[in-house]
Length: 169
Image 1 (cartoon, rainbow, N blue to C red):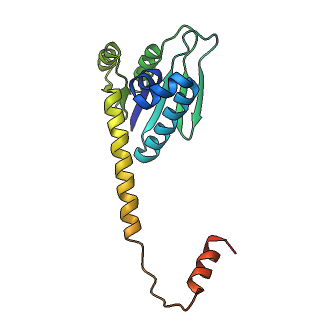
Image 2: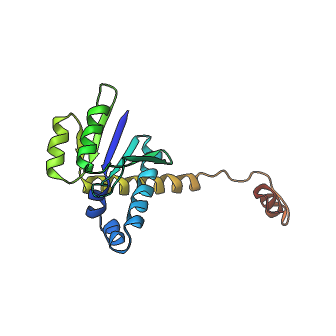
């Protein structure tokens, strides 16, 4: 199974859309990143883990899941990089290929040493854009291939049946 571990704040800082949101409200930027990665997970079927620093926040590590995407807020005095390194060590095995999305060069070198592969913020953004284009193409193709009605109906019978089908009585 492929596992994508994302350095949340690094990606937010690297993508224009999220960086602009961050300037207004960091919570909005986090939510948008999560939303995009939920779509990515649904499309690819890969396990997705997003790690956010809580370096200067008192308390223990917290974890939650939103639509199958795992979100980790690091514990007090722990950086996202340290948490990601710990995750890579625990996840990397014969059955799992771990990818880490970050543009932090030092972190990329460290995760290479632990057997994971890196995806830069720019590469992840391109992958998401390709995914969106692919979904649009598939939807367009399905729309074109919808079966034609083979039963000839008089008047507004077709419209009535369609309303019934949709529950609009």
